[in-house]
Image (cartoon, rainbow, N blue to C red):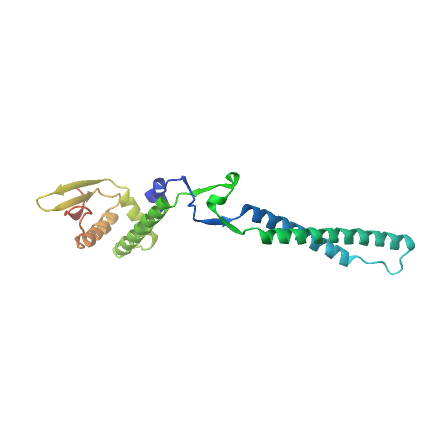
Length: 217
């Protein structure tokens, strides 16, 4: 739908400051948490290696000596990691998890995409989709083939030139569409226009009733 009506062209792709009242994850806490996860993962891998080590069925003296050395090195690495993990857990516990945006260090400040105009465009998209769906439902009743054919024909109509003729004395605004490429499409559109005219819709901001017609006067 948006590619047919070029709604994306209305969106403002800019940024805006984040309100000071909003809380964000403390970069210091995030850094400590990342370090802790890394150390913990390494510790699990070393512990798995330590537990998987085993001697052969009939080990020699050299095999036993090497086995003891590898076991000892792994155990030392695990003990060092346990100490580092304990310190990181305490540091993370003492650090604030969330802090206000205005408390962020300058190098960690950031902005966000503008939201107000995006919400407005999303609303327009929904309105346009519902209007198209309602008109397609009416139009499909007058067509031999239904479904997407009705939407395709509607989009053709939306891209067709039209003449606008206001009549202040009669309080009407006539929208005269040009003929389409196929007579069968013209007949279906004429029936749709009759349905629309029956609604007696007033053009927004005026007291002019919309009158839809097809072809020359």
